[in-house]
Image 1 (tube, rainbow, N blue to C red):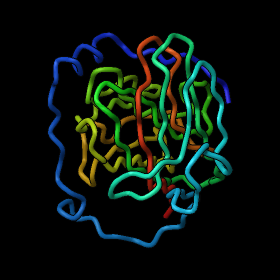
Image 2: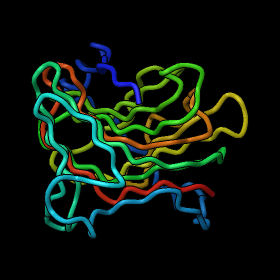
Image 3: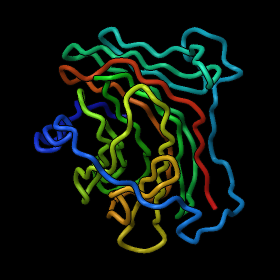
Length: 231
């Protein structure tokens, strides 16, 4: 997987730092949706993992002092903790490989970032350029704004998520027709990132959590209950 420094637009960073609020939409059950059976493509809840360094099936690429460990977390049992270096050049990417050629896919995870921490949670697949081969859900340092980043949608502020608290983040990609689109939900509620265009499509091949190499990115981020499904 190619590693590159994350660049977030200054306008979005300023908006997040100013504490802009983003109203979440109605829960799914209020939108007339019904629960359907789904096929699990990949899953991880870390309960069977021993405390210590995060290992298989995750692949870790790191430099500059960032670490990936399994730790106990109140109310969640064992979880993955990314402790990111905030120094320039310090980074970590933890990737979970998967394989799916479905044109409909959903990735879901519980995320909790400490105050001031930053992270990038991504779904990877096929596309005509690096920016089209992934959708990033990222939070910049000092903000509580979850931003979706992909090509051609660009950077779009989805919703605010509370620091230090668990939030369930769901990313759904619809690639059966062109243009491909995606939706981001937080705790089951629709966000401003609904029906956005993306170049990402099948085959999908990984999800990942990253501490970017930029100055100031890092801090403690916890991840649990990862699940990637297809209809």
